[in-house]
Image 1 (tube, one colour):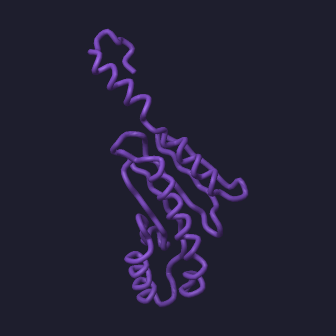
Image 2: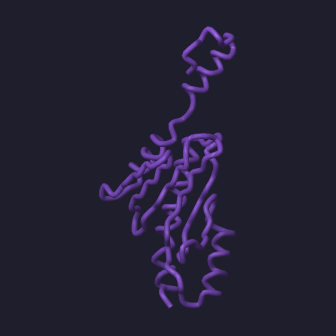
Image 3: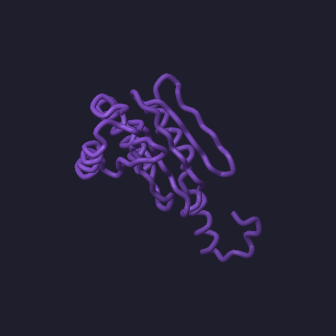
Length: 158
């Protein structure tokens, strides 16, 4: 809040007060969601130069969350690795992942990064609600845990 309230009109003061008191604390919300999902006190957090990174275990997968900052332009990304590449029968694997993307991943998707198949969801922080934070973390964790063992068994290391 502005330290010199006398320079603000009453409407400006009210607008500023509302924005400061109603802005969600994304860090606290993320940590609250993690506390409901993590297993074996596995949650870890790192905070460097305004960027937060969390990691926790959910079922048989590790789930990562990166919050690049708290402004509207910053992003939250949730991801979990489900299969290391190279894999057996990669053309069939890619078709299978595309089919899953079309039918069962909601706001998440399968992708490839750092030679791994991941389940991932990204969005800007602008107008991010507590429900959306909970939903994207839960969706990524659940889809990853539901699919990692099947993918490893069917397409594991070539």
